[in-house]
Length: 375
Ligand code: NAD
Ligand code: AHE
Ligand code: ZN
Ligand code: ZN
Image 1: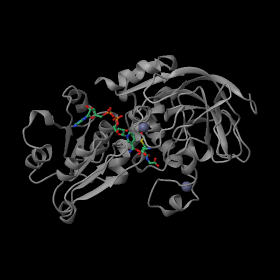
Image 2: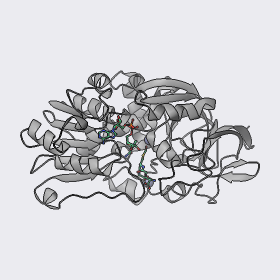
Image 3: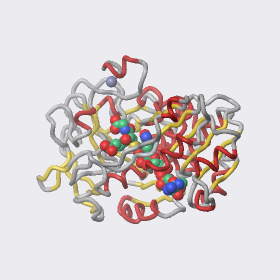
Image 4: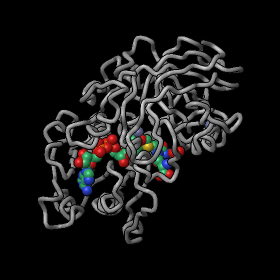
């Protein structure tokens, strides 16, 4: 198949909010600096649903969604040296080139090398898509487009991992779990003994709790409007629960009262701008830090009284938990293999690519954390 067009199945989002359609898609061979990957397992993340909904200013249609997956390199384009056919890989929507201003700064995991292209659904080389259906181009998504049996990614957007790792599990290390762990370890740098509040107990929030427990947090307060989330959250380290719908006071006040003045660290893992405000305002005066993890819809803005920051609270955000993707995803895979981090526990459902619309439906129900599609 090397050097040839591959025809395979992919879930195409023809329009916002319209059911995905499994199509025969033509996948062009990788050009210079590109890698064609056979995707074996792909999970759904709420960001896929967000873009599909039409609320993502970067959402383009028709496109192939998906960014949390694992597979095997099928072929590589000219000049690709870091991976070869047969390597087990995890596609990385946050690239790492090691050479750009961002990568060299040591201050961020964001990479500038291919972001301009991945934000508009094309590949860097020729600003075109490698996907088409009967000659009609289909946009890429987040530089990954993993809801396809084959995808083409930039070489800076793929992490080579230990072939012993089960791909049907470690596909989760492409987004949600690292995001939560890294928000705690890299972005907030939570210290032992800290009081932590986690808003939203989906996969990302539970991974925050897991990371906070590992960091030695003394209290981990989970906040969710769905009390069904509480039982499971104990297994991930949450020590106390608050359901905002059961209180008359604003949730920030409830938390301040519970914690003698506020929490040391809070994390918003929902994508709701009024919760982002509450998450900041429940932080302790003088030092409390709030990290925005959730992705809010186009047009939404955050607000608070500047006095909240004047009096020492810090507002931050995180993308992929601050992890440098190509260098640290393999490290996370190794930590999983050593049983130092959970992954299996976040997988609540397993379906096939053909059942992807049902999988999205499940994702919106309260019982689903991650649904893994076998491709
Ligand atoms: P999820 O939908 O599984 O979890 C969200 C949780 O929030 C649910 O349990 C829901 O009941 C709860 N919730 C909803 N409204 C609430 C409210 N007002 N108060 C309290 N709880 C509320 O989602 P997820 O997959 O865990 O993702 C969470 C968010 O993180 C999404 O916005 C996603 O797009 C974003 N995300 C960001 C990054 C990043 O790199 N920054 C990476 C992955 C996901
Ligand atoms: N296109 C959206 C932004 C979406 C966003 O913030 N994405 C996160 C990853 S979410 C993964 O589930 C991210 O990494 N952002 C940094 C980046 O470079 O995209 C919008 O609203 O414009
Ligand atoms: Zn995601
Ligand atoms: Zn870079």
